Length: 381
Ligand code: NZQ
Ligand code: ZN
Image 1 (cartoon, rainbow, N blue to C red):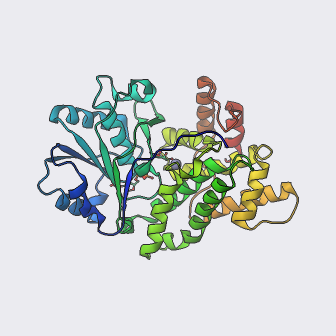
Image 2: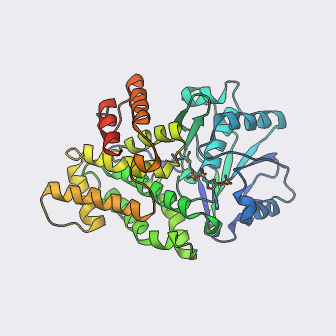
Image 3: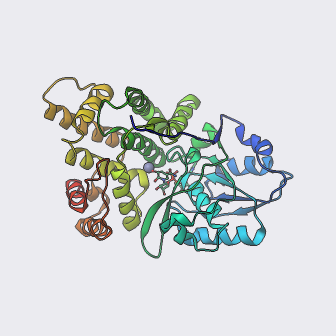
């Protein structure tokens, strides 16, 4: 196991009715900017609960942080923070609202442009403290330092690492209004977050392996009920907590990580606007297949423990594990081929050119170069 330092300071406030706790958790002596997306919170009662809890607080609202948050929008919020002397930020919505708020929080305390911060993280000089009410289980953003920011003008999308939310409120009933497609993408995103931290090699940490497999098994078990929209409270609670546990550092302690599926997926979103979780399930089977020798022992372990594949040659077991994983994604109602979304060769070439020009190397062994990205994507046409 590799050396590591683990410290996750986010206070997790979980359960039905917990949005009311905002009145206890938010600072009374600071002006608060509450950030929102496009309005889902107005239809599902979340906005009303937040405003009720903020009674007596000094707060402003910022609306319009879009899915795959754009720096062009976030700059406007940075201006508001500077002009209005904002001392605390509260993100209310999905991962995009919180991700955008993480960048706002850091860009509001420096002179440089918010995009410069994304490109040059060494400009980070602290933050306006921030917290969240998370309404979409997927990103784990509620309990991690990451945010992923898009630039409309340049068509780029990059991860940026800031600090953790002070607290995050997760009320599973807020997920009851999620459309089926967002549920599917959230399940897929959670599954792939765990796989990025798992699918490297065996024999490093049985503990991390079992935790990761526990999340895979939970997601597979609850998926039909999550998608059915019957909104069983405990099912949606497990979905929410799985998403948080999938990317808050707990399953990644001391183990190598891959993240190539995400890096390639971000480029598909940057060029085509495709929803994040949807991009991942297209790319992942290609990564598994191209890296099948390097990752053989772990693919076989996953096949056995998650999909019950216990016989056949190593090659057969790998093939069946990849097929079972893709079949699971299809059972969520997601496309697993680029062509199904009308994405063609021109996009593949553009993505490969980007990796070539940047000289990026991906994967736990940093051996996925642009040629391998090309091979991965061509398999997924
Ligand atoms: O904007 P509103 O109107 O609120 O609607 C949103 C949005 O249209 C809607 N929604 C959210 N909660 C809802 C709801 N609709 C009904 N009921 C609810 N309870 O869902 C749509 C998608 O929301 P979005 O926030 O974009 O989804 P998600 O949470 O999946 O976030 C995706 C973004 O997170 C990044 C992705 O790249 C993408 O930009 N990621 C962030 C990570 C992180 N911070 O660690 C890691 C991930 O790998 C991921 O890359
Ligand atoms: Zn993700």
